[in-house]
Amino acid sequence: GDSVAIVIRRDAGVSGSVTVILRTVGGGESWISEINVQPSPNNFTIGSVLANRLAAAAATANADYAQLDSAVTFADGETSKTVQLSIIKDAIPELEETVLVYISLPASSPGAQMPRLADGTAKDGFKT
Image (cartoon, rainbow, N blue to C red):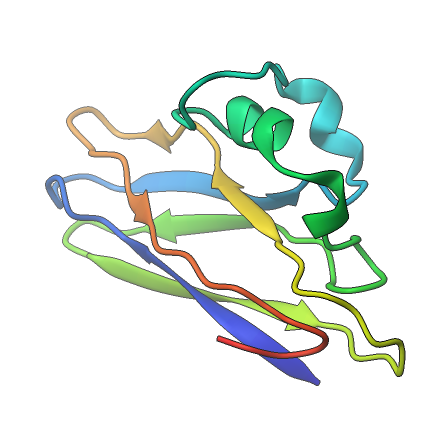
């Protein structure tokens, strides 16, 4: 099937190993209860992004995409990791929808720095 590559970059220092959890959210995943979903004039947290987006723009987990819940470990010195988000194709025409992906707080060695996340979009099956 089709997929979208999600690139996680470690750009704030590369010493020590760090593990994060990369998850999709907002499409019906069970871990939504772990997020404080509150409207905000900005989108500084995943909770504010979820609260501020239009429900009609939300893709659905396991109907539009395979939900993602993956541990990603950066070894000492590693700067980039790629994770594939599987897109589920169907014959139903749809408007553009969004898939939200977030990174958990890291479990890391002393001095390890948090990775940053790049983004992508998907429309009716596959688009980058």
